Image (cartoon, rainbow, N blue to C red):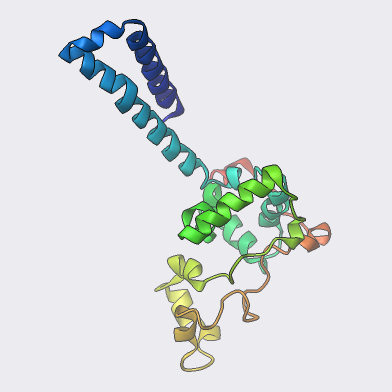
Length: 214
């Protein structure tokens, strides 16, 4: 729901609540009680729920993820001019939506995964505002990256299924699909953000057209 609509809902709810407060005698009638119910319960609930949904949707954007200063280098790593950097290769070649690049690969992380992930997300907020923020290179995943996040897009794809590197042993592809053999820590796709090495990296300059996904 657009922000303007949410603000309008809040304004209307506030105005009606004030009106009911000033003209409390209106609630003696059936119509007045209905108006009070809408003003004091229905509209506030709708406004809060709409605002919550909008903010949760915004929290899936790359802009939101990189709004924390400590994450700036992770955003910068998406522009490394080296195809061996897995996030950079996916980002620059539109293999993931650029405006939601972080969420596309970490959908099970932060506020969008399991209950534990949501708790971790709240912990991140607490550290951001009240704790000691770690250095970018010291940030680690709570659990190893799950192949499931790669398979959301690659499973069933011809290039993935027929890749010779996935056929080195009869059961290698099955192990990848069942997360027994990690995509990111099996010496295959293990160059990820590498934020500690960015000072020596060359960067791709994102153009206006490429930023729009063209």
